[in-house]
Image (tube, rainbow, N blue to C red; front, side, top):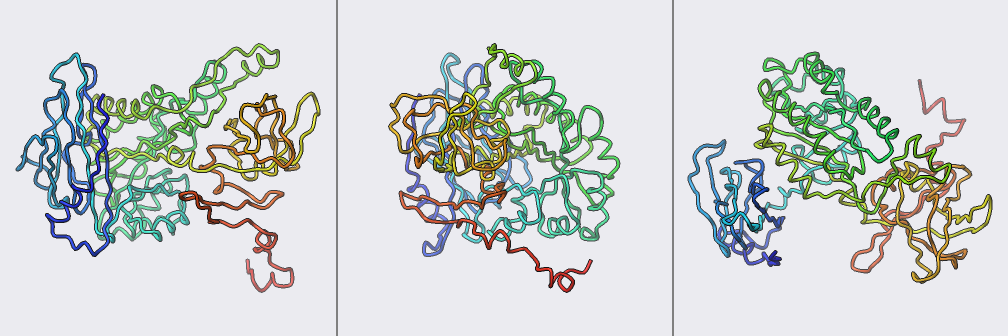
Length: 517
């Protein structure tokens, strides 16, 4: 397969010249490299959402390679849809550009000229905005402080989704004022939102968080799978589809044409660190089927599939009663789940299911979170003790679950010794933190050099998600955070000190005057 490496600066410069941009001003440009493939088994969907407008100021679509394909015709349409007023197959080395807000755009699907060979179309989409209109995709917020932070750093309301099982009246009002997508998670929340007077002059677009009730964490242990299926059905998030809870919520809230709330989206979040693409798609199949049914009654245009995409640097054990029993007698022969998730396979599966349920014209969003930042951070800790006890060799570190709480969820992360040669003989250690707490275990078994010594530094990889934000000062203060850009370290979050821990303390002599219940 041809590998395409192209510098898009020429096309970007052409865009600036065509529209007469003042190059002394600041602009924000996003460059998306896209390859659409087609085979006898894969339909080459060029634009999953169909004719649409992305809301950019300007954009350019440059074609760099076409191989063994028909189709892929670029089209411009009137806003809102209709017959294309421009339709042309752009050949390699050519491009089209447009003012995005003035029209919709689309591209027809591709098919292979020779079904025995793969075909593909390689393009760059260059989206350009005035700096004041810059766009970075979107953010998922689950609290008032997160919403406030997102607004403060420049995200527009229409780039945000407000999720979470509880939202205060103040948070709902902030979301409505800023045109933030609210995904309803309870009937009370929907009714409080409906009763507010903030929507007197307009309808408020809302989403409904649903639960397909499909277990996405499965393994070779059937007892674990039974437990996992039960947990999936009993999720506290959203409304289950199969037992009618989602339908009942819609009726109870009164989401209809006469009411102030307008259902335009469905949202689901299936879990975290999901590694089985087929199970993930099977769960989304129920959501897509439900969306297809609801669109007959409601103007649904958006499906948010949540996140949970597994990363290759983390493993979560699938261990139920059977596997625990086998391990007790040294007979655990069951296999662990594979590492990571094939995002390409997920995208293809979503496209296929969307076509099956006639929802491929909808907008699809996801919340990749951990998949983006997991390997962007490592936690550096120092060995403070090595001892033999209980038939184990313990490697004690100066960092524990106070800094890395998710490891307690049966997560396994790669641990790298930084002061020892990699090719040294190894032995099995149990790695633990410094807390006076029996559960402060970072790895039950970890192969590290036999020459490990007190004072050595180790790196716990894939620490980018749920560490700094979930760390606590339980027993010990929080750690500092250092960023490294092109080899240059810089402190971005200082270490917590004694005075930081007790800064919220109100002296006894001041309590009656500062707090009036």
